[in-house]
Amino acid sequence: MRLLIGLIRIYLVDFIGGTKIIKTLKLYQKEQLLPKDSLNAIRNKRLDELLSIAKTSTQFYKNANNYDSLEIVDKATIRKHFNNLISSSFKKKLYPKSTGGSTGVPLNYLTTPESRSAMWAGIIMSWQVAGYQWGDKVAFIAGTSIAKSNFKHKIFYLLFNIEVYSVYDLSDKNIRAYINQINQSKVAIIYGYASALGHIANYIIQHGPVDFPHLKGVVCTAEVLTNNVKHSIQTAFFVPVFNQYGCNEAGISAYECKYHKMHLISSRSFYETDATGNLISTDLANKGFVIMKYKTGDMVEIDESATCLCASNYPIITNVMGRTCDIVTDYEGHSVHSCFFNILFRDDTSIKQFQIVYNRTELKIYLNVDPTMAVQTHYEKYIAEIKKHLHFDHYTIVFNAPFLKLDNAKHRFVINES
Image (cartoon, rainbow, N blue to C red; front, side, top):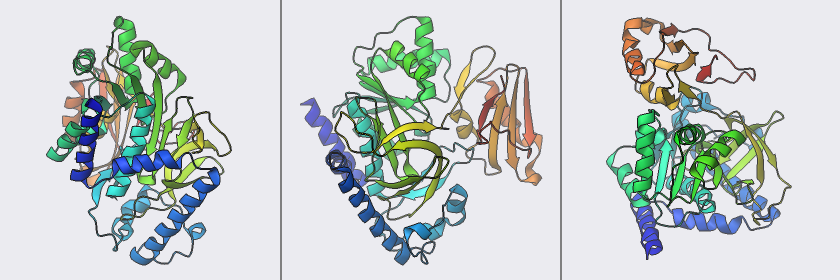
């Protein structure tokens, strides 16, 4: 009965939101068993259909000859040509969405019911490997979720049986409250940021064992899941831990199967990697806001020829590189997830980009702002808010200075100098 009620609730999600999550999930479950040649034929056909739409109904792609002739686009391109990427032939509702801003600047784009269905189908596939069944309680431990606090999103989470736990403040007090609530709510699946879950796991390990009698599995997302962090999570929660990887604006969705292979849902995206491993992809499900050959900012290694005992013929991602999101910890042990700063600055249009650099005694806020706004007093309120959560001897705001780079030259919006 519980499974039936859970399934009915997801059908209500589809009905209210105009999505087809269940249908898309069944499609991907069927397609992954097809021979590799058939999967390639499916994605090639879907690419041809999308390219035809792009050429005839968008300003940006109106002169496109073929896929190979297209230039690679990035976040800056999308921001500059936002309206020219909208398809005039798409008559359904378009939904605004934004990335978490792993480079310090969130990307705003539009998505469709089909693309949203594809995203959720991919996420559910990762949950199912961890033991998820329709109707199970799921705990979201993430940062972007807390921004979705309007009535529609609350209804969505209620029907999906999802509870949201913010990583805005990972103090010991909040971690203890989260653990108690997860047990009281009989959470079956925990889904969240790898670094945040690792931090919570370390707390559990340090302060004594906790029994989670209803928990079936943990699924990590948004960041690189290292072996050390995975081991800590398994030790603390005493359930299987799996990985999930996605880049929704690029149509990328991958899940770790029970044999611990990361399968890329190739029938949703037309993907490629360049000579250095940069992942470039096209969301084949988004025909309303067309982004083709999008440079995701991630570096991956994909083995097209590998096979897996789970019988899925979706290609295997052997390595995801360069996607991390650090925990910021002060000298007293207080910690916040780095998305704290995304949330803190997101409504201030004067801040074009930011970077947080810290060590044991000092936290520095690098801000890229309009020169006319480079006045310390305007931003003192942010230091006051940070002081409520993190204790350092010194807090410094640096205006329009070059951002610090790691050895791989990739911009990170949080850097630990220690």
